[in-house]
Image (tube, rainbow, N blue to C red; front, side):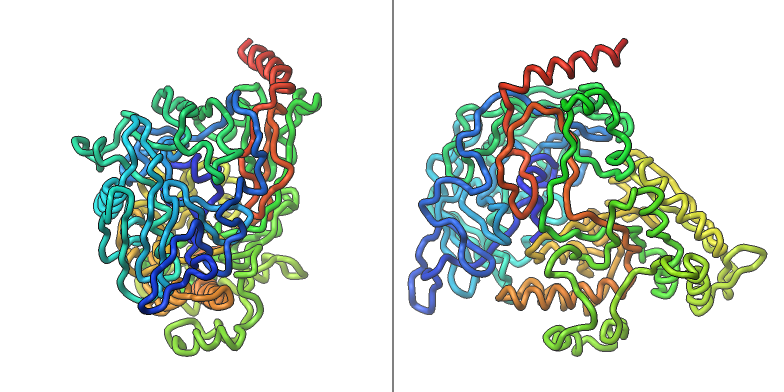
Length: 626
């Protein structure tokens, strides 16, 4: 299951943000006729790191002081405070108001611990799960969180929520409240190792609050939640402020100690990242994750950094890179021939981009799971071949005999040789150059398409790519739209090619159906942006989901990776194995950085350094205003 960090869980509008796990604690597996013992945690494979009496996670400061505020930025706008529906643009940070049944640790691959849940029961075949809720868990209005709320949430998200909930919950057969604080989910279909904790990642919504409200409608009424923060103030499209709930019911739990230390968290919205960077330098907000290599290398040369008041730091992690790239929409006839898709990849010059635009900071992505043990390498192993052989004829032959590698311009011939290869592939696919224009030999139609972008930053990558395509006779138009229009067009698959990202975790699972499953190809709002319809890929996704050991999971994911790569769904971009963060020097942070990387909500306001830094920020803002 894809699971971003706790930071991204709380800071984005996505509800599905917990990494999953699904194996019972040692000694609890039930066999026929045996009772299932309650456990405090579940791990996908192996045993949980932390026992039932643990006090806090190792990567937090359990005595971190509370207070101060954290200011961050967002790009675009928002018109909705309900992050669980497809309509509207949800405010960044909407997830801060909600608690889920379970929460994960960031120093384990795939382990979940109870949050709203106190204990859970799972049989050996994982055909059902029972969650025993904490009686002290409550919503912000004081109402207790009950099994009825859990049942209501499940049914509401599946029937009225964003499309991915229907993918995730497809194999839930029944859900029933067994008591006020006890709820049972039963599953159907084949073995699904993640399913018990796919349900466990579910946020719980208050049935009494939504009884007379339309869940499917956008809203600017702050919905009732149960989490560590709630909305304090906002102005649509400009800012939103969350305040810490002082009497949050979960603040003393072991899974919460050391987290959520800021009294306030504010997000200011900006038109684009360039404006946002200038605002950061003027002291308007405190912290930014830098995604542009050029800015990281050259954009932070200003007095506050020279004075040591602004710090630039790279936080390493061991997470899969995921796949970012120029994504084809194969619903378009233009991109249905794999030879065409492969040909265009030869026109992207990563080496030139890395040297001239990225200051050599990036690595070329060669796998959907790069930077991890899940990435395929070389040719298939014997265990992988056992999965792939039954699919021979349904998947590209190169899967069995060749090592996938994106085209490179290193070497004597460089881009020129690559364009020759591209021309050959296009000719094989029925395209020829007439009067400088690549034209289909039968229909006479010119080869023209649009590259859809969400921000001007991507233009410096896309425009040189379009120029290289022009040398092939292809007219590729680069179009940048605002974030709301981009999101709407991606949700409705109204694009030819777009820069897209598929995030991955150390425990891939049911989200792969949302990414690649045939059922999602025509379901608006799914993340099957490529429009892939492949029974072979569906079968491999099922193998990933059904893997019952870490070894089986690795084998299944690598096999899936190979087939995705050789289908040429994207032109792969690049990645880095760390997160770049610039911040004003007013924060404390734990000494330990977990395997998943920086956990921002374990930071705290440093009362010793904060006031001096804020004085510098205030002066910088004044100077900017003048």
